[in-house]
Length: 376
Image (tube, rainbow, N blue to C red; front, top):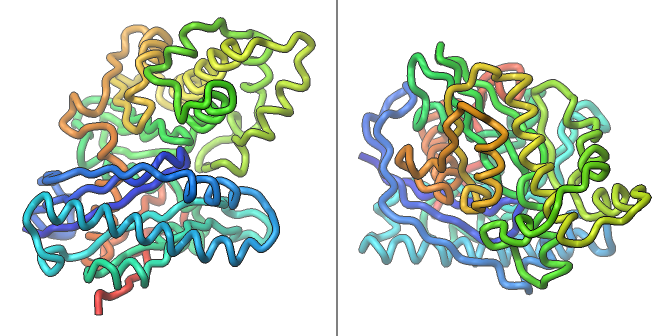
């Protein structure tokens, strides 16, 4: 038995989710025994969220602002670690390592020079110093160096958690960006980013209602889908690109949405835009399923979008005959899945096992992911 902590803050920029995970049956094979002993969430204060959001765009004094944001992020990550340890009465020495995602502010794989870059802010050395636990972070760049997208990294864990022989299962993670894992009945694993998740929905809700998110999708459900706007959004070329592919706020951002809205002859109401953005998230995912997994037998949903009743109802309506459920029904609450993935990735690093899947990221082969900051 080994204990690892996973820390995840995603493109939704809502805060940090951390899990304390217990792994048994250690060995080179994908683990079969994974148990979450504790989960803790800390929201981002505006004093951190706004600088992180601003770093998604070019601006003045970026290096200085990014360095200070990395320090601030390490501190809130350390607070989550402290809460997890306290909840279980554990000492830092009892945890083998922390797998920390960091905060993605730029993601441009394979662009510019053939390698591109992906940038997850986090002062890993400071996190190790604050926690007294080995830290594994910078988990995407090794895959990029091997010609991959660096994302998504969770499909291997999805396979271990949710794969069932003889059943074709899809897992849809609806964080800020949406990504799909396709688990074939034959054991094959594929995965890719399929479009926006909650990033545009949250932006529009905050702009017009002042709320961080659309609680249960009630505002979206009150509006009407604008067919012309939906068609314009679905015309985004990224959606037609074949996998492997990944994206982020570099593409699906407020400026991208504003450009689409400016082209509308009749501007929709704010509520109708929210309804259309929700349908866009659903359509991007279900269109990708129809193209790449037409025989899917069930869809499991994780991330914050799994808690949005309107999105879940629209997914079910768009996939007649396919059961749609939260990953909670398969044993892992939706807000724990990604954090658990980074605990799993820390474990693969410690064991010198590869953490990427060539069939997902397009890398030239399996690689041990991450950089290690020892506790002392």
